[in-house]
Length: 453
Ligand code: SF4
Image 1 (cartoon, helix red, strand yellow):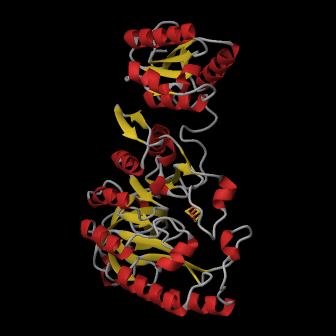
Image 2 (cartoon, helix red, strand yellow; image 1 turned 30 degrees about the horizontal axis):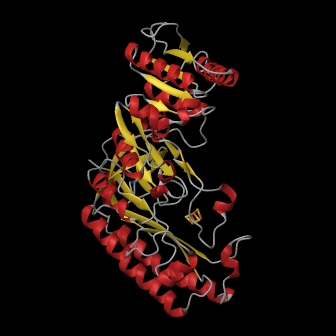
Image 3 (tube, protein in one colour; image 1 turned 30 degrees about the vertical axis):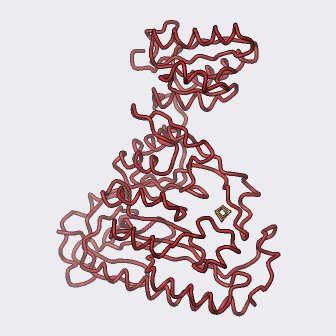
């Protein structure tokens, strides 16, 4: 019992509030929390408040004050929670405030303060939940939906506006994943750089410190977990600059997945792209000055309605200047329900396909040259597969599924002259291990190497 997390619960108000209390308590008990009758034996106290009339408000405020005085760790929910300003003004030290029926916020706040304990004999699922990815990497979804209205996209009409998960909820999940053996977190959303805008960057406590629900704070906090953190779907807003020092310091991976889609301002405007007015080449240069190791991945659409030959050539020039590492591209094709379908001046299908080919040829040469520059370097590699004579992994520049791989010759039958220099016995290696790899060769997509001596 001494290690079981314990909850104190004060339930005020009408039967509807009582039902909320019952639901929260049921979930907490199911997760293995004990419900205790005294303040001093509780790890955290939940106060479910009432705000119906002045007397009820008074009673609720008194209950919060008492719980704070007797215990100190207090989560407030219920009707008075809808007047968060009033509570925060009187009791700035409360851990979290949520309104009626917001069960998830209460559970998140309790988890952040005192995580549930995993019981390997009783629990049907592992602490990090069931995952479909290999054990050593996981996707971390930080929000759902999108506030933009790109003219070629129907995601906002399918999934609605941006709804961010509060930062403590995301960080508790990330921590659980790290504890369960995940070595790489892939941060995903529709617009990672807009994270928290909808919550007005609400601060939440994690590891005893207040963190704002925003991109920079998330990057900083994830960087404290000591595992690889890779950022996807970032738009080139000015505040993105603030995470580059974290990359240069090795806190998060020097990798940005930024869907530029085009370089020409007129086409970007027709696409209604976020951050379309940004000077992307200058921004890329500034990022590389801070973090020369930075890998940039992007996607583009060629042959968008109205794209002229001159504008397409401008895009090819952009590729030359930007020297992106990884690029995916599509010839524009209409999507049912997208606003772009109504745009005038469609580009003929044949021209779209030709432009796609020209685009891919240009980028293939750039990507291959950038990989060649890595020959001779030593890269830290996360292993995905280990065979008898070859292991396959990824460097900081390679996200799973979409980027390249690093093939590592084990033993004495590897590629290249230096392949005989191996240090580790291949039999001890396993997926999820980090190894240092000396790169001896590169092709269009992948690197090849040997374990660094
Ligand atoms: S393409 Fe545009 S509208 Fe669609 S999800 Fe991305 S940012 Fe949002």
